[in-house]
Length: 400
Image 1 (cartoon, rainbow, N blue to C red):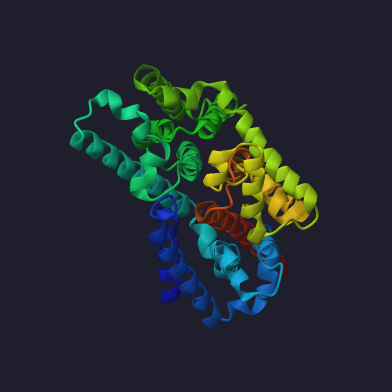
Image 2 (image 1 turned 90 degrees about the horizontal axis):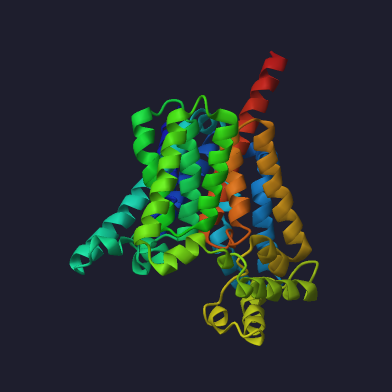
């Protein structure tokens, strides 16, 4: 293996490890990985099959195409700024797919780095909470108060609670299905990760964990007794702690049904849908969407949403309003393709990766921030690397 390829792999591990945390550090590592990998591919002449690589990476690259559609409604070079967050959707496939074999062979190591990154992020956040409580003279019962939850909990790691919650769910499932990790390690880490979901106040992520629990009971209980016990222990312990020590805010976030049926949420969705109806084919584009949403929010009395420049809080509606029916159709087709491809290949870990993104996208616009975009770029391309490597291997055997 060439030195540049080895350096690229270590940079990729570092990128995946820091994906749940510090955005600037992660962006620098991602940029370094892309640069080293693409230069290495050029030196070895691997980019000569660029067309084939882009076709294989189409389920990911198509999202970059949507970003271009949303950005360029005229020829102004200022529109390039709208693409800043989206370049990984094009460049990560160009960095990984020309030489997919090393990534396929290191699938477990990549997910392991991701899991340890999530664990490290939670530990950073918990360290911040403990320090704040000690310096403020707060009693232990304040651990689950509002000032230590959600975005306040994650500020020390410079990350967003919704994305971290999705990453944690994927990490939990990785640990459960990983045969090489020890039972002791799983019994320690799974409850820690589950407790983190309560601190993140993520109802969707906890819902995904309950679905995961049902999956284990129905399909894998005999092979995963310890993992099942760890998952149940984490969920029960977290529920008890929230019930006895949690603030009213946290209890409402986790247990109250009106959080889902909140009329303000539906009103925000309606604003995005009305914008879509005005430009149903190609949408209004990035340059206009915030202004039009702000007007719609004010008309419906959603002053807080207007002042905060809230997005649609639904990824499908986000694409419908910004890139029209084209955006909505591409979003559904590409994500469902990746999800069903994983199911067809009986790779439940990858199925969870994309299912979690789909479910979280029902209440959050997961692909408007760089964390969600990079998550899709990295793991979508990793799945296609595995598919590409297997196909190439079969072709080599056929021609041998």
